[in-house]
Figure 1 (tube, rainbow over the protein chains, first blue to last red):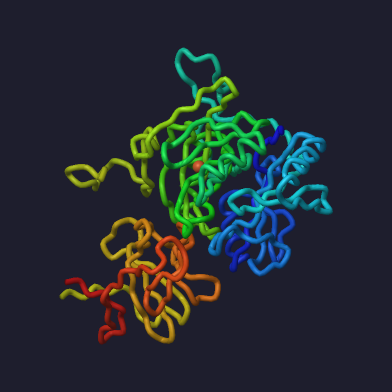
Figure 2 (cartoon, each protein chain N blue to C red):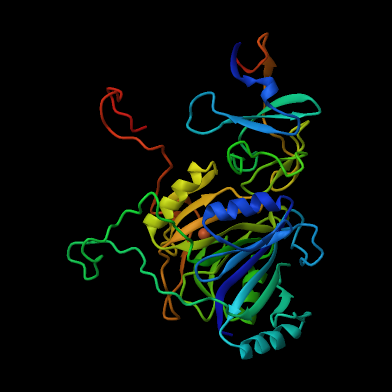
Amino acid sequence: MRITGLETLLFGLDDVAGAARYLTDYGLEPARVSETGGRFEAIDGTAVVIAHQGDPRLPAPPAPGCRLRKTVMGVAEASVLDAIEAELRRDREVKRLPDGSIESVDDSGFAIGFQVSIRKPFSLAGEISNAPGGSVFRPVNHLGAIGPDAAVRPRSLSHIVYFVPDVLKAEAFYVNRLGFRCTDRFANVGPFLQPGGSLDHHSHFLIGAPPFMHGVEHFTFHFGGPTAMMTNGYRFIDKGYQAFWGPGRHILGSNWFWYFNSPFACHMEMDADMDLHDASWTPRVVDLKADNSQTFLLKFRKKWMPGPGIPENGDYA
Amino acid sequence: MRAVPLCPVDAIAEGAARGFDPDDDGQDTLFAVRTDGVVRVWRDACPHAGAAMALRKDGYLNAAGTRIVCHAHGAEFLPESGHCVQGPCLGRRLKPVASDVNAAGQLCVLIP
Ligand SMILES: [Fe+2]
């Protein structure tokens, strides 16, 4: 089951225009957008798709209050779709949709889809740090800071985090039926899961939670590096959006993070520089606590500089 | 009791909300909502995790202006009572902030 990762997340909500503005402000590219919904793409074509919550074409959410209506994953080739269809048909319905993708539901009630991956290959250097003694440097006269007029765009749909009522059952489905691996785990909380066709630390993270939490905690796109991610987050706050957590750097996965409130009944994150792992990696198991969740945590602050007029004892706090 | 003025009460339209930062914390800590003509002021802190609730500046309501929404996890509250009717803090309530309108028509919060 060579699943390559997330391709599309489909949400149903009441304020389509507000969500469209939000996703555009986040940096995604509007594609095929109307008053009833639209598609918002990262550089590689992975996307968030939004529609009105009353749209009858949307699959049911896993629980009331959850606005995620479907998670579409990619596969390398059509034969994998056939294999997934055969596997899932053993105990559940699987639909073939007109676009050739398949649709079913996971063991936690989340609608899932699979398609031959539409990820567009692209080549665009990520952030490179000039480190004394290092072997990779930015070309001479190339600037590290992102200028005020330079656009920052999310590169690729990264991962989603589900609140599930039965985390063992939820994990077993992805591992035993779809060939995901656990890369790391928060004890008594849940696993980070990596699909068989990806090296990213995780495409899914599952959190065992009471039934009234059933839904999504957050989802995120990869950015080109910490500078791109923080420049984009800073601009997002300038546009009036509300940060929730970050910026900081996680320990499991090493990804830089910045979480924001969103219209999707969950957070939307910006992330950068996630670890890659293969099957030789031994999963870590750590307790869930603040010290194990981040190497450091920073907080937004308005631009400031030292100079005349600052208080006698500084202005750091 | 000290009355701290926030804005002209008429500046908050029916079915609209507005956030305030009266202590200059660098982000809004209170918000006011007008429903059925009445302006009520609430702490900008979701009973679920104490999270700041807005989507963007002044964005505290659903599209129809009929529910207060926490945009951290989608909890929904009745604007008349502050009771959570959907989401992780179901049955709990937003913290009301005592308020008044002064002779000049300014919406004020009353700080003990
Ligand atoms: Fe994340």
